[in-house]
Each structure stands twice: as C-alpha cells, then as structure tokens.
Image (spheres, one colour):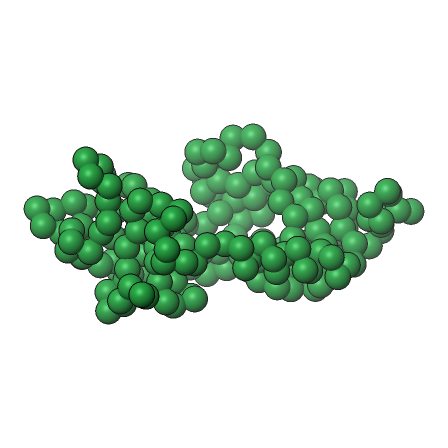
Length: 193
C-alpha cells in the first residue's frame, strides 16, 4: 500500500532511500535541547552522510510508522570533545563590526579552506588581547537521545538526491563576508583574495 507521495508502508529502509522523520533530540539523561522543545521534521536520503552515523544506522531496517527511541554515543554522533580543536587567536584575527562585543558561548561562522572544518566555532573565553575558540561541535562528547517516528520511507528518486546535493552546495563556504560581520580563520590559514 502506498500514499500520494509514493511512500510504501511496508518498505524497509536501506541505503539510498528517502526518509522523513518526526523527532526530538536531547542530551541523554538531560533536558531537551534549547530550540528542540517541539517535534521537528527532517528528511534526507540515506547513504550520503547527511545525518550523524548513529541516527542513520538506527533507522535502517525500519519502515514507515515505526516509532523509535535510542541513544547515540558520541563516537556515532558528533565525535568526542577534542582539546586539540581549542585555539587561542589574536583579537586582530577577527572581523567584528565597530562597537560589537563578542561574548563567551557565542557561535561564530567559520571561514576555512578545509572542507572538513566545522561551519561554526564557539567563543570559550575572551582575554585581554586574544579570544579562545572551540572548533568542536557543541554536542561533541555527548550521548544523544532520540525519540522519533518514521513518517515517510521510499526508494530515493533522482530529484531527492539532486535536491540534497544542491542544498549541501548552497551552504555558504565563501570568504566574501556577505553572510556575517564576524568571521574568523583557523590557525595557519590565510584569507583568499
């Protein structure tokens, strides 16, 4: 049996399948993450690495209508928190608008020539002439608890795969400064001219 989207109630999720979930995530044993109080929807094509490995792994083998609750360890989520990803940078390396005051806990977009670099970094500490930044994902080192329902599942169409590719390519990795007034470079990197 299928619905108007072509989603089959009996199809078992495997790699290269389109899936849409209704979910909530929190740090295991902790409160629901800020901004995640309401159930969210997310859709993606499996097998392309668009979600954390532990989430995708636990969806495979299930079907539309299945409700799942599970914990994803850091090794299958956003990785362990790594001290080598904490850097101290001169305040001169930052481009803040005049009168803008950065603060600890603030998330900043990151300009990097490294495609594996994170999209954002967090300010950990502000010193007299430097700023300490953390390039770890904010959820690195934390086990994540998911409660979800699979609301759509079907073999992926070419349009699903292309739209995911287009979405990934449109995420700004440019050094043009048009997106944000506060951007930084990782140690050893130079701004492209």
